[in-house]
Length: 393
Image 1 (cartoon, rainbow, N blue to C red):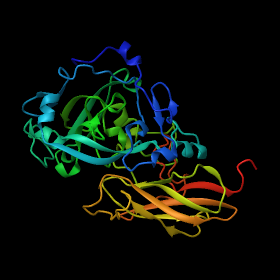
Image 2 (tube, helix red, strand yellow):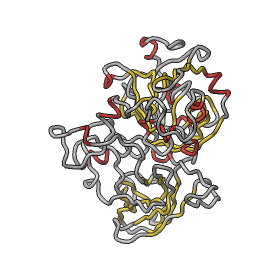
Image 3 (cartoon, rainbow, N blue to C red):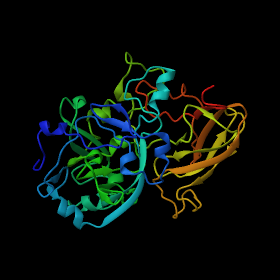
Image 4 (cartoon, rainbow, N blue to C red):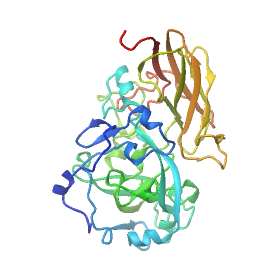
């Protein structure tokens, strides 16, 4: 593609904030601290988790950069940035979450394969760009199309990014055409993040944002869009990011028996406390985030200070001072909510949080019930241990 530098240029890493906890250096994967994560409803770009499967591409000539649209359509087309910027611009506040969020805790139950993540492999941003539905209209695919005249049912996104899992080929993923052509699904070709142009870590100059779906489908550094009959056959669609039962291991796994994971399940985590904390006083404030996939709002967050025997409902909000009403037009449909609860704890306590979404989906109690060999979708109750006393005792 014009404007792309060679692999030797990839070694020049972008600048990163010192608060990030580096989980892997090559390829670079990092997350913020818990306290930094909930310091703002809209996650600052510096604090937004970094998830990569290969070296970070360099695109240095955006005038020559283009995205090709081809496949099971009548007319192929090359789109330049100026073409995309001419389309109506939309801003969508959406939380992206890595499917491996909270993998480290799952690996403590039984070993799993994958980059270790604490609870901060997610972030909430205001994405700016063109709706994919409008882009597809440029090649003759109307809104709310499920199949093209040539038999196309899926939209494949191919990245500039090269990764070893694809034997040096590009990272790729797909979503159903019916989702891509639905303007209400808010799928974007985004060129802005929090009001600024994307930076290299987050897909400069153009990326896909698929709200409500695991981050693996929001392809960065977009190279091409293909309309295809079957879902993408790439590694990360067919041999990764699938949810298997706890009985499946690396000896008996059959990847074809499971569909690629799309929506992420209901999730919450406590961010104001570490796994083990010592506090000076028994009265504490418990804060964290809750989010569910598919645009499902958060109906309730329950907090317990006795390991889950008794519960109190936490307050929920997106913006400070504005009441959060799940599924209301005043709320951001694709975004997380913060929760907060006050508690008087005894000398020691196990504090637990669990969320319920508007479809009454609730987090499972135990890690063991959702354990899987790739360590994805750990949505079990989040637990932390707290003791009142002096830190040096």
